[in-house]
Amino acid sequence: MTMANGLSGPMAEVGDQLLTELERARVVAQKKLPADVVRLGSKVSFSTTDGFDRTYQLVWPSDANISEDKVSVMTPIGAALIGLSEGQSIPWKARDGRSLSLTVVKVSQEAAEAVSPEAT
Image 1 (cartoon, rainbow, N blue to C red):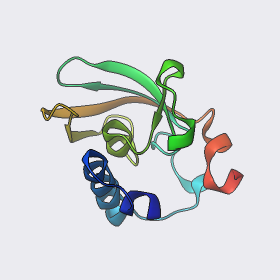
Image 2: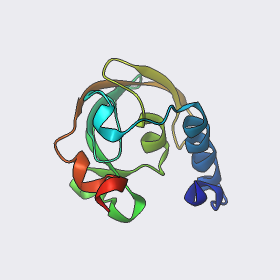
Image 3: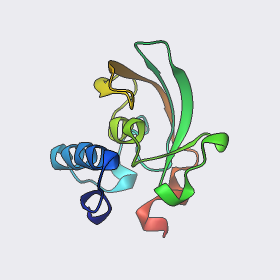
Image 4: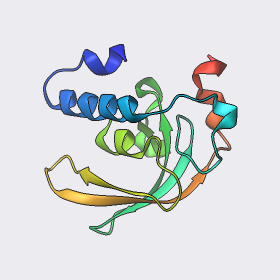
């Protein structure tokens, strides 16, 4: 992933996290993914062990807008969420360095098709 490889400074760690996730990934057609798997365009409700409960849509960096609850896949939360399914948890390092656990509560695909690579 060229975007992740070209990062420097604090964002390099996010790029490394995303590349690690991509190395573990099994590539399948989007239409074959179960509906409860987080992908670009998914709306995902999650909680962290420090009590942070939110719902965001996972988007490309150019579409990110936190006031619209759209978070980039190139953020620590975005990179952690991609590929998880409802009920799954993952160790997650917050931007302030705290080690937490992030748990996916609900995943919706109502807007996923609009931001998928196949749609562009």
